[in-house]
Structure formats: C-alpha cells, structure tokens
Figure 1 (cartoon, helix red, strand yellow):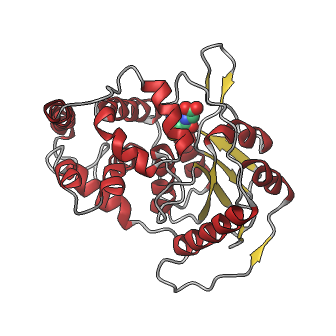
Figure 2 (cartoon, rainbow, N blue to C red; figure 1 turned 45 degrees about the horizontal axis):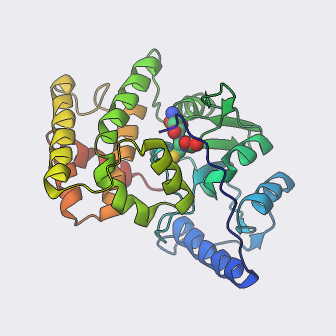
Length: 310
Ligand SMILES: N[C@@H](CCC(=O)N[C@@H](CS)C(=O)NCC(=O)O)C(=O)O
C-alpha cells in the first residue's frame, strides 16, 4: 500500500466549536481505549512535551492527551470514522498486536494523512521507501520510545526493535527469520489487495477522507467504478482460494514458525481483522473470512485480540 502516490490536500479548516467538539470526542475515545473496563484510574490531562505539541499544532485538533507515563507512542493514520477505533491503518495494527502480545504499554497518536511526513521528520523517524521521483517517503507506522529516545519506522523493524529493547517479552522476530517473515507479510498483503475493490465501499465509511482519496488515486486503475454482484463474489472467491492455499504450508503448525505466534502471524491477523472491524463481528463478511485457511484466520484474529492493551 505504500507505493506510488503523494497526497497534499490542505488540512480541513476547523471552526473553534468543531475543534472543541472533536477534542472532546477524541478524549472520550482515548478514555475508552485506555480504560475500556473503567478499572484504571485516569490521571489528569496534561500538556504534552514540546516536540509533540508542535506536531499536534500542525497536524490535528488533538492538542491534549492522557499522560500515563507510557513510554511508547505509536503514530497511526487517522482519526478513524469509527468512534471505537483511534487510527485506521492495518499496518499500524501489526504493531499494536505486537505490543499487546508483548504486554508493553503504549498510546496511539492519530495523524492526518497529509501530515505524515511533517510528523515523522519532526520526531526524527526515518523514511521507509522512496517516491516515484526517488525522494524519500515516510509511512505509518512509526514509534517513539521515550525510554531510549529512539524513533523507529516500519512495522517489522519496530517489532525487531521491541524484541531487542525488551528482551523479557516474547520474541516475534526470532534469529534468522526476518527476511522470511517480511516475504510472508508482503504475500498476505498482495492476497488482500485482490479484494480491495470489493472492500472500498465499506472502507469509505471507516477511514479518514484523505486516506480514501489517496487510495483511490493509488489504486484507481483496479477499483472498478461499479462492480456487479457476480464480480464482487468472484473477488471474494479468488481471495479465499489464495488464503486457503496457505494452509498446506503450515503442516502441523498452528503458527508460521511453530507453536507460538511471531510477527508474521500477528501481521496476518492485523490485515484480516480489518474485515471484522469494518463489517462487524456478526457480519457475513467476517464469518466468511474467519473460515479462510481452514479456520486459521478466525483463530488467529481471536488470539491476537485476546492480548489486551496494558
Ligand atoms: N511495510 C510498511 C508499510 C507501511 C505502509 O504502507 N503504511 C501506509 C499506511 S496506510 C502509509 O503510511 N502510506 C502512506 C502513503 O501511501 O503515502 C510497514 O509495515 O510499516
């Protein structure tokens, strides 16, 4: 998803009332997110450190946030249009599932699509790829870890950094598996892109406008303006077939490298959990997807979701 296109639509203008309303909503979202069962005492809101203040002033109306002495800040594309989700990027979910699996506390900062580069530069996050003209390109996710002062970009590199920095947590990029995991994750993403035209309608309800516009520019050539029900069904069947093909490679293993999940498993869960988030747990779409790969997809997403944010 990261290749090829740069969006520079101006940030929408917020009236004061609108900004305050959004800020309140964002606080509710954060409270829900940080304290879903109401069993954690929430400290008072507090101004953020100087650098982050600058990001916030230039990026979004979120100018206040909770300070839970959390060391890791995860930057996500957002805000999502679903009140229960702060950000909207499946790539970021790979990091969130990894942090939850490792029981490492974190907070999420949503960034407007057209401010990713500015935000990344202002905290020193390295670029992850290049634009068609050869200049550097920044993508979400990147994280900042205040305990080490480090800023890391790219979900797999973030996972590896977390393994190395927090060695007492379960390892997700075991020695010698990074390249293979990277190829697996790219393969899963390629399989999912086949379904993209069938998901676009729902995606528009979920993701921020700027991101939708960007994806339309990026994938306009494959997103047919009007799909017939037969064409939609064909896309679903094709995608199911390519995920079912994966099953044979697992042998007796439940997970990619054996009995415990690694980054590749969490990344697969992250990509496919988007269907559950967008359509709902009870939807026919999620029921179908959770059966893919001999039911492994459903089990994997359940497992990934069972690791809660600490
Ligand atoms: N391999 C990267 C992919 C990251 C990626 O593609 N992120 C998207 C998030 S939706 C992005 O930031 N795209 C920016 C753009 O397309 O301009 C990772 O896993 O971190």
